[in-house]
Length: 147
Image (tube, rainbow, N blue to C red; front, side):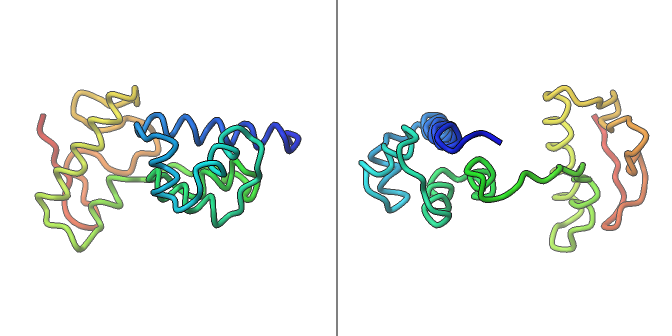
């Protein structure tokens, strides 16, 4: 485990990076998060230890997960990420139409392809654990992707 000053510096640097990525000034983020500009500056420089509530306000203003900031602050332990079966989850959503489901799965698979996931020419991931293939029945309908 990192010692506390390093943890706060790392957390502050992460918040600053997220703020810069979101193209927000320090002043604007402080307004959106409802905290003072000097206090946010001290957090970003690793000089202050923010509470869970402050981290939640910052996360909301940055539109990121509060859990991400909690893990970086040492409030929560990092969970081992389980592979989420996004296509199956989309197909099982009863609130979406079949066309909406198909569109969401196509977009997801195209992003996975761009990220370098093992997606075949048919648009389906080809690993041994993938439960969905062309024409397989999902909980919410069939998955038929045409490229």
